[in-house]
Length: 251
Image: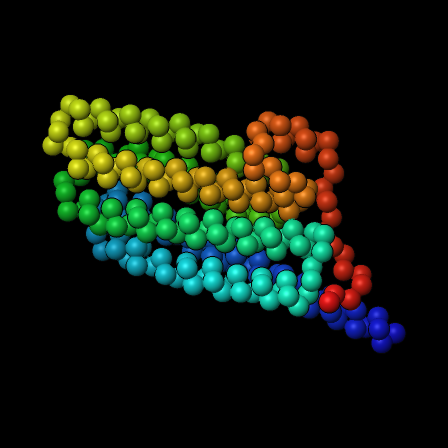
């Protein structure tokens, strides 16, 4: 009976460790999502102070990544997770790397927004960038939601949105090049716009990566270099892989 009680205690502590780390990942993701939204707002409203605040806030994202990474290292060293639990830890480590890189892109947008605020804004007030920004922030939100719920189907739908992001990105790039050719006075602003949409496109890529990690957690399959159509067909044939039940004591 004492052994059974110890096993239950260790299992409960392990579950608490995993849930605490997952909660920290979602907090980090929520902060990054806010940073991206603020950066786009700073650009569209010509708010230099907000742009600088976003850029200076990137150190918080870096600190969150370091804290979570250290926690994952501790769990790996002291709990020796196996099967599904190990997949969760691996996916978390990969996810916070992508979130940190999203934060870096948000920092770039913040600095550019601050600089563009000193220039005359176009009549459309960067309408195309705001539209792309909405798609990208929805991808970030939905990928984190899929992570929280371990929802592989939702993750797959979110990953598919990356194609739309790429199309919007390419359209804005072509438009910017046209503006520069027609009026050389727009070159400086057009180049900044191209850097912003490039950052947004990369954020979409990172959100897609997180969605693919969710599929890895649920199905135990690395789908990073597989077409999404093939992924969907394969997942229909494959059962989800259960997380470790931890019936025995963890090391």
